[in-house]
Picture: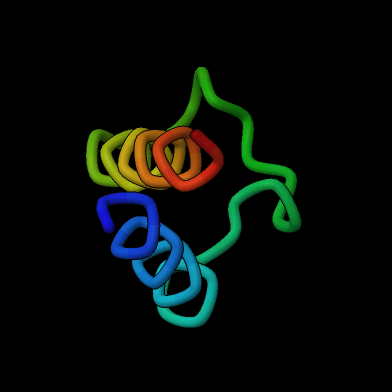
Length: 50
């Protein structure tokens, strides 16, 4: 059940949130908001594959 929720969230993240890897964002120059978005995407992806 928990994994299904995270898989749905991962699909929403992919559709809504920007992909900074495609934009080749330098993490040392990223703003706090961009780092928060990256962290959120990593958290959801990690839990979706467990």
